[in-house]
Length: 63
Image 1 (cartoon, rainbow, N blue to C red):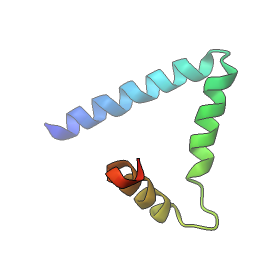
Image 2: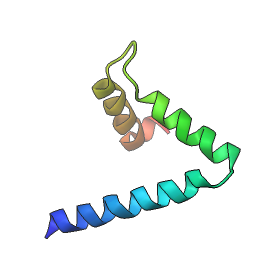
Image 3: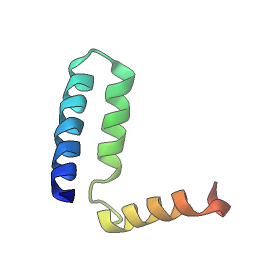
Image 4: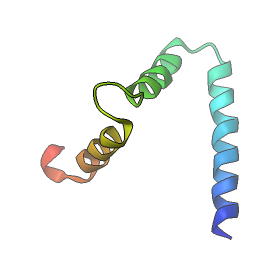
């Protein structure tokens, strides 16, 4: 059953992302672009960037 929940979530997320991006909201598009570009391979591998993000979210000392 969990895979069905994941599939439903991914379908809903894709649908809502499409609706949001279809609108003519320049700021929202910039936020999506920033988030996408932040996780592209570059100086640091994507795996490290995600690890830094999760550790900064869960660490009270970094808030």
